[in-house]
Image (cartoon, rainbow, N blue to C red; front, side):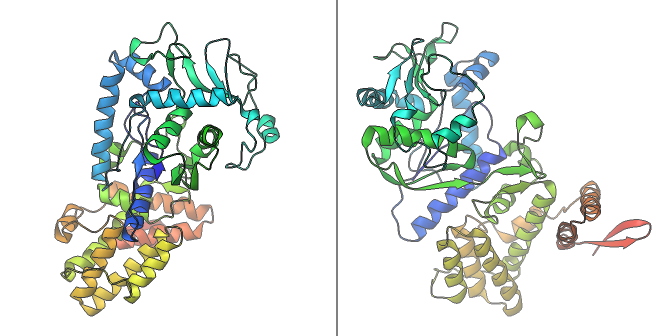
Length: 433
């Protein structure tokens, strides 16, 4: 499995958390199901944004990327992300990229432009657009730019960028195509081929990468090797912030570290896991508070009934239903629902064996492995008054918009945290249960 990783010019954001958790769950379940998994998640450590940020900071490219990679690992570890089998850095695979570009040129799929770049000739490859389901004519209909920089077609993309005089020396490599650096798309094609072969099982990444990045990877890899790059393509859904797509330009952008200031890392992981990886995920304090309260319910069951050490018996009814859910396109929402049913039964039956199974199945998703008492004490401070008032206001706005399901969900989320709402003609009041 190859998953497109981060471009390391800044701290990881909540969208990166979504992707890391989603594919961490995928590889965990594949291993749990008996597969031997080689999991590659690359690091893009050469890119226009990296060059600009390093220049602005007055530091070398390597100093910036090393620092950001260390921060990435810290964030991933906090989220319970298991390390991939390998984490290749693009700058360590330049020879493989040059070899791939050379092969494409000899096959007539790449050409040297007047400005020194080497571009991929999209119209020379039959079937371009098959992943995104777009024809070349449809793609051309959406063009907003004219042919630039010597491209034969606006859809052509760069394989090798010629060096610019103003760029620092540490982003320039010598090659048969002249001094320069690789384009973004060729990096992943080369690293995937070197580490997994010309054709492999699963390629993953965020939904925003389907076009053009993954489409261009397919063009490069299949154009060079003449076989499918991957058998299956998986894309995790977008992150929305209060129902608006997260974007730095909109100011609704949150790093993982921003979120960790107010929420435990396992709450963030649980927030991601309880949604299906392909679905859009709406990020807000209200939803995180709800995730916090829900996770507390599971830990409360484990705290009340000491879990036995359990080896999962997949014929046991709860475990069997969990397995059916996960086998159906990694259906974590249904699997999490099984955990809540088990927690309720643990509370009724006081079964130490069932409590142990609850913990073990949670562990398959990377959850419920903390000491229950420590987790509950860490979250015992609950929501403060400002948080409560913010949620009451969000509920009022939902009611005004006639979104009664959301209003009821907020009421239930507060109730799970011990906050009872009382509506009256004077407004909504609250008290602790």
